[in-house]
Length: 96
View (tube, rainbow, N blue to C red):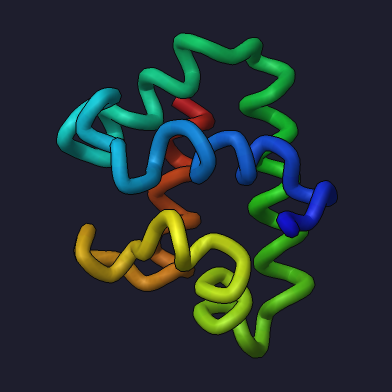
C-alpha cells in the first residue's frame, strides 16, 4: 500500500509515469506537461513539497526508498537519471 503522505507523487506514478507512459508522451517533460495540464496549480505545489519531504526523509537512502515505494511502476534509471536527478528535473518542470 502506498504512503498517503505523498498523494501527488502517487498520482504521477500511478497514472502518468508507469508502464503505460506512452499514452501521455515519450519524454519526461511531455508526460509531466500532461500532469500539469490535468491538475490544478495547487497540486503542482503539493508535489513540489512532497518531493522535498521525500528527499529530506530519505536523504541517506533515497534510491532504495524510491524503489521500494515506486519501483514497481517507474524507475528513473532507464530515463538516464538517478532518483536525485529525476527529482531535480521534476521540480524544475513543475516550477515552469
